[in-house]
Length: 106
Image 1 (cartoon, one colour):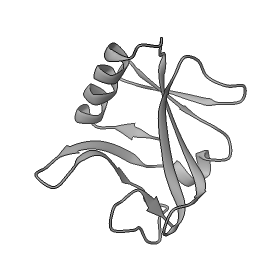
Image 2 (tube, helix red, strand yellow; image 1 turned 60 degrees about the vertical axis):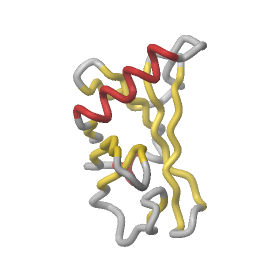
Image 3 (tube, helix red, strand yellow; image 1 turned 30 degrees about the vertical axis):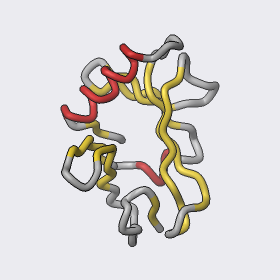
């Protein structure tokens, strides 16, 4: 389903550890919008929602809703630090195209 690189797992673990609210894992979902048709949404959550797919990535829990699951199948999430920007990047085999910022796809 979804893979997290070691850099992404470390970034999520760090975010959970520094969160002021209890967090069990990270929710990754797809919503309509962005400059290419769909956009990725991520956030820390305290528990899965009913019907969520729960993926354990080396101790980091990833929650994906049913509607987003087909769009995210096979996706690898990385955390990249560069001079221009830092943040999560998505390598999604289901994306026919993506915008230059990498946060949305079609």
